[in-house]
Amino acid sequence: MENVILATSDDGTIVYQKLTPKYLKQAAQTTKEILFSQGTIGRSFGVPEDPEALAELEQLPLEAAKDGMSIIAVDKTTDKIAGVSINKFLVKSQPFFQKFLATFKNSKSRQYVDYILTTYEFFDIFEHCGVDCVMQILFLSTSVEYRKRGIATKLCELSVKHAQKLRDGVNVKEAVDGGKVGLEPVAEVVYAMFTSPISQKIGRELEFEIAKRRSVKKSGESQGEAPVMTLEYKVLHKS
Image 1 (tube, rainbow, N blue to C red):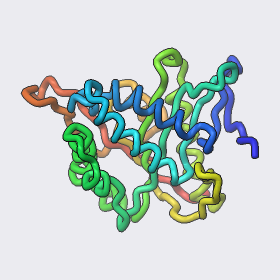
Image 2 (image 1 turned 90 degrees about the vertical axis):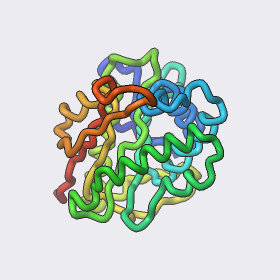
Image 3 (image 1 turned 30 degrees about the vertical axis):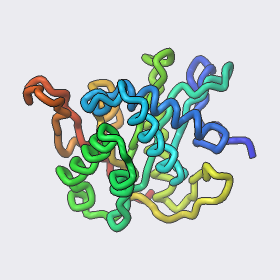
């Protein structure tokens, strides 16, 4: 079945749609090449220089996408993914990242996962919001040639709208394996770890609330020099 277009860019060149099996591998590749290779956390642990670490980390978006809530931006002319938001449900009783910490063999990919896990401990979104399930905008990436066009902002905006529809009882999930995804779980909050000034600006535009800040510190780097991640959320109310 053809994917429904959720939105189109003003110039008509970019369409936004749910992530489907057709684009799954390309979405994971984009996440690897952009976020893991160029993002703050990956660079802090030397991931870009380690092909083995990158290969292991590519498993994360492939697995997270199975929740059926991820959104992509596609160039209509080339059919290439211009940007992707891999969205993942976090359920209090069902930890996600721990299994990768147990199976990853590369020290840098393990450090990457461990940093995310310790960030969850640093700020407990479940306790803070009094909920059992949130949807995290987990991996947000825009390809270099498509930047400064508002694509990441639109991906986040649509992700929030998607989560809101689910909160209202509409099953908007899209299986990436050709099957079906049930209505549950349903998130009551959209959560994000914004690691750059650009993504943090998106948080302000979409009226996310900043709960805490955490530095992303490289070995040997002073606290004052380190980039700062903001831990942000937006509560979803039933319409």
